[in-house]
Length: 498
Ligand code: NAD
Image (tube, rainbow, N blue to C red):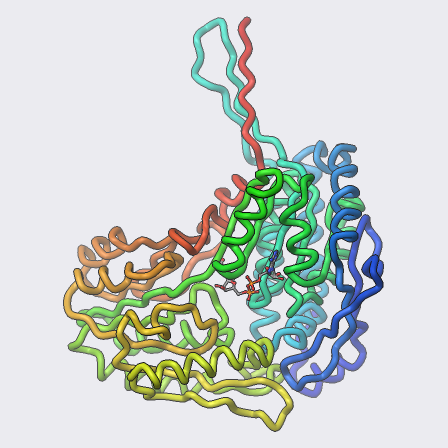
């Protein structure tokens, strides 16, 4: 399928796009039981995209009951792994075959550049589904090392009904990081997309059925967190809750699980990741390119954004200058323009949050050295310049709290010990970058970092083979890789005396 070449090609496609805002339960699109809807607004220009079903407790009850019934029927949960593999691979193909439409929905819905919606989000979502599909018929269970007259079987079984609550920054990709391992291991899933970006989740539900996933195995309930999200988290018949989103809501979900049925809770939460550049970084220009991308990509709305740049004094001024040069190419533009690399932020509320942090940085005495302004307001959309603060102290609000926007805090240090101390002085522990030509220093720093992912002499590397997730208040468990299957399976020990 060819990619539209110009902004007007994409705009023409948008005109003919039929946007579906319904919930998907038991293989059918339907309105919320209450009949309520909320408006899905594009941050590109403020236009109304569609009314979307605003699901609540009633819909959660219906979807969970259906999901349980289909799970118990065994039509999917007991299907041979090779069968589930074939269906998942077909599902991945259908995502690819519909990539233009899915990319367009994603861009219209949350404002990211169309080039990345297609090449990163949709392509990554298809890869995640395919990777899980390909893995499932190559995994063996275990036999324990028993005495001669005994057999100890250690088997994995699907957990049952999984509720997956996902955020708006990579709506389709985060959903598919969950759906891949959740579905392929035989579970029934209820996906709750963010109220800020529900459209791709709604669309892929029918693609899943088209691929051969039995009706009722994948349900999608759009709606608010405090209504349908909370209902799922408190539900007595949801076995596992998987979540990607903020640390604040992640903590709340642990409370809900404790207040209800002690469902398993797996959390991918926030970050404030340090990107550490030592004086002996092998290529300062490459470090600058990566640092700019680490805060500019996806408008800084990335859990692993390199939002704290820790720079050793000897290279600080040169590096900050190089980053400012790089950020010139990360200016916001129209998201449907194929050359645009930075689009709109997700909504006015998020823009206001970002601007309030920029103000806080100025009030706390950090030096604003680049950006800092809202732009393109005349479009009716919400856009902000990439922004750099220098002379930041790690205790400042802009350095200690997750902003989720393109705001970089530059913090100076001297020596490896100080770098590690500053890097770890955070409630988060998601990711970190380390730039040095000294292999010993690279390893020592990587080992000392309390962080789920460490990237040496680059930023944000990895593929489906690498586990993704964090230490401390960045969450628990991992997405991607075979480790992600742990969230969706129970381990059973069957002991036989012969
Ligand atoms: P959020 O926590 O506000 O919302 C996430 C989801 O939770 C949404 O679907 C929302 O409707 C739902 N929700 C909100 N309140 C709820 C409640 N009381 N009960 C149940 N569900 C509820 O996060 P967001 O603003 O959508 O996303 C941004 C956050 O996601 C950032 O903190 C970012 O770091 C994090 N994130 C983490 C990762 C990761 O893998 N660690 C990846 C992407 C995003």
